[in-house]
Amino acid sequence: MALHTLFRPGRIGTLELKNRVIKSPQTTALANQDGTVTERLVNHYKRLAEGGPGLIIVEYSYVDDDASKSIHAQLGISRREHIPGLGWLSDEVHAAGAKIGIQLEHCGRQKFLGVQPIKTASDVSWDYVESQYGERPQVLTEEEIQGVVASFADAAERAWLARFDLVEVHAGHGYLLTNFLSPHTNKRIDRYGGSFENRARLTLEVVAAIRERVPRDFPLSVRLSSTDYEEDGITIEESVQLARLLQDAGVDVIHASGGHHALMEYEVSPWYMPRAVHRSGWEKIKPEVTIPVIGSGSLVTPEVAAEVLETGAADFVSLGRAMLADPDWTRKAQEGRLLDIVPCIRCNDGCLDRGLNAGRSTGCTVNPSMGEEYRYPVDPAAVRRRVAVVGGGPAGLRAAAVLADRGHEVTLYEPQELGGALVPATRSPYKQDLAGLRDHLVHQVQSRPIEIIATRADAIALADGGFDLVYVATGAVPRTLPGIRLAQDVTDAKEIVSPVVVVGGGMTGADTALWLADAGHVVTLAEAGEAILGNREVFTDAGALPKILTDKGVDIVTGAEVTGQDGDGVRTADGRLIPAATVLAAIGNDSDSGIATALREAAPELEVVTIGSAARNGRVFDALHGAFFEARRA
Image 1 (cartoon, rainbow, N blue to C red):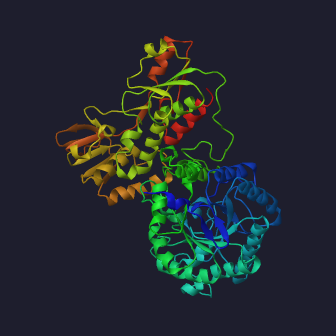
Image 2 (cartoon, one colour):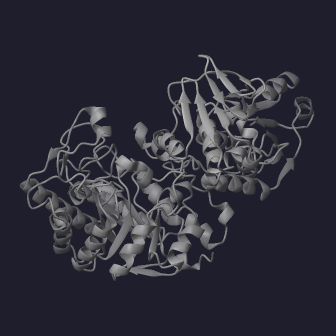
Image 3 (tube, rainbow, N blue to C red):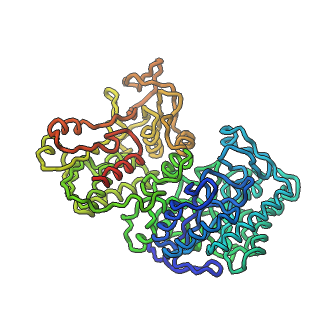
């Protein structure tokens, strides 16, 4: 796929953009508690601008001090005191070569602070918020609705005064305006409920008020969920109708996305969801309007994004998590350096599970500097050292590349295929994003002056090898069951005979079961505990994978402690027999730091550092972050 379509100039209203790549608004929780701008937030957007996108749309900012703030450390645009910091942010992005917009938001029922007021269209509660805090939404009165309209207009004027190039109204993803647009959340019987015309009234009033307040040549965007994927929710047909009305009302661009927070697998689609997941929405909206359409949602790679533009499905593409993973996504794509792009693996771990969901700022599994831009440069080392890295998994590969960039002489030992645990983890087509990370990490090592030795490292040989420092990145050793093959040792689904029992309902077991079921096998997933994926997995995995497995025909059996195998299948502790022609074990892993112990005994004077799962079992996040920070200290 030719990528040139990404880099053609474009126009939104009066705004000229140097290319068709837009950084999608994505909350970072990098602001102060009062919504004011911080240096961390400025540095984040400045760094994104340096990566070459045509336009950066800054994360959602709350428009009033009553009920619009959604989350901790959210950026504010609700009062004049916010303008100086916003102006600083705008100036820094402009100086780095990009245009800048800002998104305006009222949270509606999606308020994650645990306190009233929570104000929305109706008292339709979202059980996630209610179960956490015991609070239900309050219904906005018509007088309060007019106050919300005025707040959006006031906020838009502040954006203009701060010299942003564009302002965007958030009418998607389950926030206030979608609470009115969707029949699922709008049960009103006044002029703001019932018919489509009534449900669209608030959004159109907000647009009209903004158009009256700011100059006509100040571009206005509206972000829509083309559908929220609820059975009784927003339909694509109504979104098309709304897009036409918004165009007539003076909107300059439609930013088309999809989903809402109660169906997060659509809003922040994980690895098991399709790429370009909302494409059907853009393709229906675009021919019905003459203003441009921005396509958004899991575009991830330059090839996917370029194909969207090449086929005319959208006029611009916006990327969120992909630019958290690599702020230089645009520049590297334009230079044809595709394997140098640090790929988003759509894991939702660093950004959400360990980030916003944990009450922290947004982070990134594959980019340890996200949110801490400029703080952790990989500078040349003061003294060049001979360094051995033992293990070619994600931690070893990342450490080796960083060490080489610091100027050290690096030797990497790996007797098997480079990638370590990522090799069996990427057997399934579902894991195309993780496979991209594996290819990237391998390329980073192979494109640097790193000696790769395809043998198993020996402690004595390492001790006698003249190394100043050894990193042990041997990963984890799978636990075994007597006579039962390890799930991760299977590389070809065709060699397996059905029915299959996969023993162990963690991520490896669930992943293996999904892969084999997709290949047409009859699969039972046997878990000793009360539920599968019970070991603190990422919320989008734990929430959706059980249903996906069931829909694929996998029989999930819990409370099934497997004690052994016989000719007919496996036996459980309570005497059950689960029929099987093939049995695979996926019962967890133990850290493998044996060579580190042997090396310290053989050469006490040698510096030895254990990283990745050799030090502590973890996910990709732990391997890459630990390796990066250890290696940059060498």
